[in-house]
Each structure stands twice: as C-alpha cells, then as structure tokens.
Image (cartoon, rainbow, N blue to C red; front, side):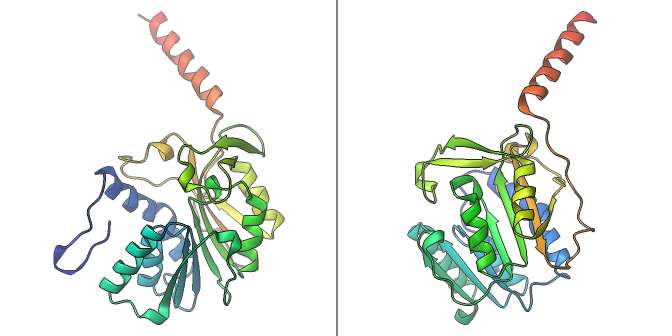
Length: 253
C-alpha cells in the first residue's frame, strides 16, 4: 500500500497486507536505519526483486542518494515508476530495471543491498552473495523463507508460484544457520533479527518461524545493538512437543 497527500491510498488485495507491511518495517527496516545512524543519506541502495517499489521508496524517503530497483516483472516496475512520479521523487535519484538479477551489469557501487524475498526464489545462493559483494555491499538486509531443519544446509524445494522464480522452479531454502555461515564466507557478520511484531495479522509465516530476517555488515560496522533471534526449533520437534502437551492435558482430566 502507498499513501499520498489528501488521504489517497492504493488498493490492497487483502486486509492483512497493510499490517504486514507495517510490521515488516518495524522488524527489519527500522533496525537498518538505526544501524545507519537514522538515515540513508550518503548511501546508494540496490533493491533486488523490488516488486512495486515499496522498499525502494522507503529508502528514498529515508534519505538515500540513489536507489536501483531490479525486477523481472514489468507490471511491477510500471507501478513503481507511477508511484515515484506521483511522489515527485527526482528522476536522478532512482532507476528501475527489468531483468534477471544475475544478468544485470550494474553501474556504480551500492553500499546497502535489500535482498527481500529473493533468496527463497533462487537456486543460486552463492551467486547471490557474489552479486551483492560485487555491487560493493557493506550492509545487506535479507528477508527469506527458511528451512526449519537442524544444522546448516539448503533444502531443495519447488516453488508454489513458478512465475516468481529468479532462475529455476527448484530452489534452495536456507536454514537459519546456513544464512549466517554463507554471509561469513563472504566476510559479513550477521545478526538474525529477533521478532518484534505487535500484531501477527497477515504474518503467519513469521509467527511459525518459517520466515526470518537478517542484517549483515562487512568491515568494522558494529551490529551489537541489534536484538538477536535464536534458531527456531525443527518442525518435527515442535510437533512432538505439541502432541505431548495435548496428551498431558487429557491425562489431567
């Protein structure tokens, strides 16, 4: 949802989406701003899989010097262009490009990268980090579906919506620990963000710990002030615990 002067808002397909966007901003975008000193002024932002430009606009409204959004869907990009024009954002401060993120030749360096909903629709997690590092990333925000299995590995899964794929319909879903270790391989310290939602309407994937956000930083930038999440318990363990609780309740009757 985008808001304009005079109380004008873009329509939303389902009511929970409004709350979802608000809660996600609190969850990973506000911590990003806190890490950057409260503003993105002086920074260039790369928004991978930018969709209709919601987070690109958030970056611009937070002071970013320039934002490049990349998406494979032209309809989304048309919507982003329309919103930015309606918001009267200076043309020199943004660009939207259609295409596969792995096939783009980036102009200039981008010290902040938004990788929101991209890792879960790609079969190339290593190449994804190579792309972000090659862009000059100093800070990366990742929000992705995760495998709730134990240890550090990538689970092979098939996309429910093939049109959302970056490369293949078969994708590699990372575990919580896999994201941390993959980022470390490329020189990034990582904090898996602790949930801070006040309303889980439209947020079942977060509530069930099937989705997780991370902030990664290279160099000497400290992540000490960020609230850290603990790895989710495997789905089988949670199911067994719930079953034990149900049985215990019956015995007590």
